[in-house]
Length: 195
Image 1 (cartoon, rainbow, N blue to C red):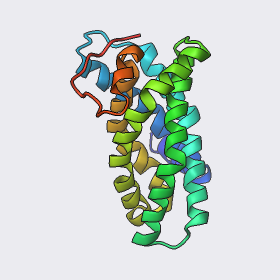
Image 2 (tube, one colour):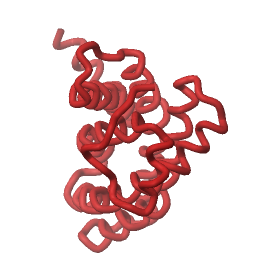
Image 3 (cartoon, rainbow, N blue to C red):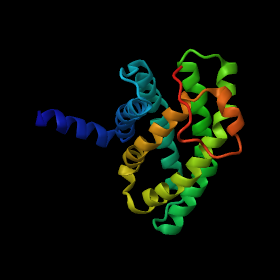
Image 4 (cartoon, one colour):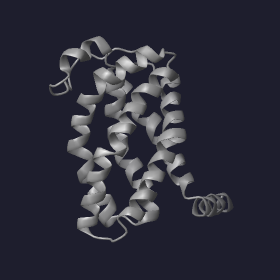
């Protein structure tokens, strides 16, 4: 068994993106399962969790890794000031596109149409972005300031367990019930329905 772990460690050292992909392939479906349990489901929807795993591993991890690499080149100096700049730039560049892609592509993975995906983005993006704007700048400032570069994507993936649980909650809200919420705060105790 130690030989297997040393091979995995060597592989992730050689291909750092793989760390994020492995992390997101595990943490994103876990967030979905946590949300389902909070929702009160007795039997977990493993296909839903699988879609989260697929999306987290194949989309989020590579795009986040790319963003982290670009941010490292744009703001190469370590320190608090650089960390704050990176976090703010991420909040206005990567974060909106990541949220739009999440709602759009997850709706398609669920078998929805392009029109349904666009409607979901329109109704859920702004409430989700407002919550994210309160959370991610603080986490990313810490990430860019304290966490070593080779562990930044795994750190973010651990932080994203709570975030993914929140996204799973938002994803399961009915789009029609979200329309009145645009411009207001997100109802944490609101109705949750499964697709």
